[in-house]
Image (cartoon, rainbow, N blue to C red):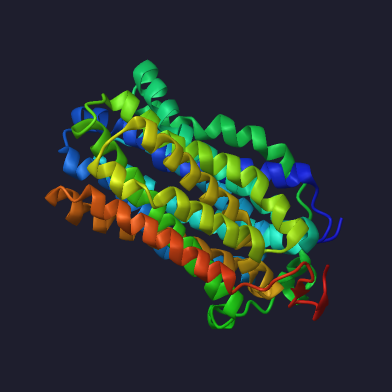
Length: 402
C-alpha cells in the first residue's frame, strides 16, 4: 500500500495512540496530592509533573519532527510510541520523585516524536480531498482524551492509587498496536538508505499559509486556555458553584470543541481550508464577546451558550487550520511542519498560563476573558488569509491535488 493509501482504520489507530499524549497531561493532575503524600514532596514541586511535561513537549516537537523527516515518519512514530509505554511503566514503579520526573520527561520526549510524525503520516498518506476529515478525527481524539483525562484520573487514583494512573496507557496502547503494525511505509522508506532529504524549519516557516494557520491556532489556544483558567474562578467566587458544577460549566466549551471538530474537517474537504477556518474564528469570537460582561454580571444562563459557541468555533476551525498548515509543507518536511504547528498550540496555552497567573492574582477575570475574545477575532483575520477554494497544490508533487 502506497503513501496515499492510508485507510480510515489506520487513521483511527494512530489517532487513538496519539491520544495517550494529552490523556497523560490532564489525567495526572488528579494524582498530584497523592504523589505529594506518598513521596514526601510539596505540591509546588509535584505540579512540575504537569508543567514540565508541557514545557518539554513545546520545545521538543520541532526537533521530533526533524528526526521524523530524516529517519522516516512511521519508524519515528513507532519508536516514540514504544518509548512512551516504557516511560509510563517507569513512572508507575518510580522509587522516588527524581525518577518520576525523569520518566515524565521521557514521556514528553516520546510524545514529541509521535505527534509530528502522526501529522506527517496523515499529510503524506491521505489525499488532500480527504485530509481535513483525517485531521478532524485526530483533533477529536486529542480533545476527547484531554477532556476525559481528569475523570479517568480521579477514578483510577481513587480505586488504585497514583501509580496506577501511569499504567493506564499500557493496555490502551496495546489495543491500538495491531492497527499500528499494519501502517504502510511512507515515501521516505523508498529513498536511498531509507532517509528523506528532510528539509528544515525555514523551508516551512517561510510559507505564508503555514505561518497564518500556525498563528491562528496559537490564538485559538490562547482563547481556549484563558477561558479554562478564568471561568472556574468566576463560577466559584461569583456564582457560588462547587468545584463539580464549575468544572461542568467550563466543560461546555470542551463539548463545543468536540462537536465542531467532528464537522470542521469534512467542511474543509468540501469547501477548502479558508471557509471553515474563518467561520470557526467568527463563531468563536461571537461566543467570546459576551464573556467579559458575563464575568462582571455572572449568570449560568448567559455563560453556558457563550462557552458552547466559543468551543464550537474553535473545534470547527481546528482541522481546517492543521490541514492548511500541512498542505503547505513539502512532503519531506511534513513532520517538522507538524512539530512547529503543534508547538504553536503549546505556546498559546503557555501564554494563557502566564497571563492567567498575573491577571487572576489581581481579580481581573473579565480582562482575561476580553483577551480570549480578542484572540478569537484575530484568529478569524489570520484564517481569512488562507488560500480559498478546493484546488490544493501539493508542494511535493508540484501539481493540483484536488
